[in-house]
Amino acid sequence: MDFNLKNNYYAVTGAGNGIGRAVSILLVKNGAKVIGIDKDKNSLFNLKKKLQKNFIIKNLDCTKSKDIKEELDDIKKIDGLVNCAGIVPQGNIMDCSEEEWAETLNTNLTSIFLITKFFMKKFINQKRSSIVNISSVASSIKGVKRRFAYSSSKAGIIGLTKSIAVDYAKAGIRCNAICPGTVDTPSWRKRVISSNNPIQSKKDFNSRQIIGRVAKPEEISDLIIFLLSSRSSFVTGSVYNIDGGMSL
Image (cartoon, helix red, strand yellow):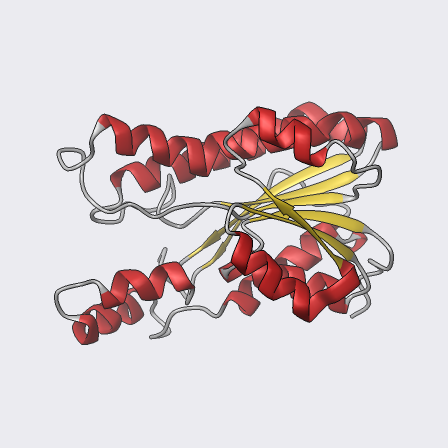
């Protein structure tokens, strides 16, 4: 399928690893230019080697509005935004400190607010854009054990997505959310390895999806590309579960 993205520019947060990396690669394959945003400089430079001139590095922390304004002010053309940056703290409400709560909300939710607000003026002026936010099945969709702060932040993303969709539909701006189940990312692998029993931990993660395995980042990026493209021109405010049946 031709997604008609040639010479379009898309900003991707959390571009250095996981879903952000996969969607950056797929965007370039479809002729787009990617503005890769991440605070992990090494991962950005590694991806730059692969994507070369089609990948513009922006090494910054999306939770800091000052950094966003300083580092992204030179961007003149922007056709869409993919918000992938996030962390996955574990634990229940009694395990969660005020510091962890604040960090989780800042990283997973406030960063989307700040960077989307920064680009919104450009989106409004050009009267078209598509925003895709990465939420999670562990949110308002499904309760997952030991994901208290994480699930709270991801539920907030769904509310943010629907609000933007309603407020800006007539301005030509679409906003949708994707809710993955467990995805094979460096963050997930780190959690598995650091568990008391990595072999059992991996089995447990696989079994949460009724199809019996975790997702590949590329399986999520396919849907992101569709939502960015004109192929999904009648879609806004939607929340897509892509979870191997985890939410059933």
